Image (cartoon, rainbow, N blue to C red):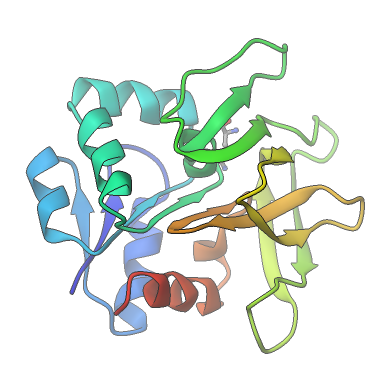
Length: 193
Ligand code: GLN
């Protein structure tokens, strides 16, 4: 049983380190063939436009969509969440091309310049053991979630920052950076490991 982490750009090594720490085999995914060997895929934080472009160049878009159709769990963190979304809007209001898998619409760089990056404690539904330390770095937020989407966490201002829809998990922040592995365990559970 193996978790794949899309390793084209961004914070993929950090995710692999967390999975290994909790005893879950994790591999870097760069090629369509590698998607055949995995039980779950993480799309990491980074720069969503770059990740989408590289997925296109590496012929990964159709195979990743197909993975979701086959019911293999996908987890998008920060930029990865933007890639998963059905709709994404740039700060200037223009739409952005995404994988279009999860029934959420997201706003990129939603927190503006003054609060570019921040850390906060989040109460996440389904995650036991107290608040989760969440690092937001030029983060997106979910401004609309469809009927089939379950909201798991909001900021104090009501912004949705964690949600799940069947086998798709989205977090606005970077859970791989804080040493708290509960979300990695949660996703491992979704992947049935
Ligand atoms: N601002 C980035 C984007 O829109 C996301 C930042 C991140 O992944 N930390 O793609």
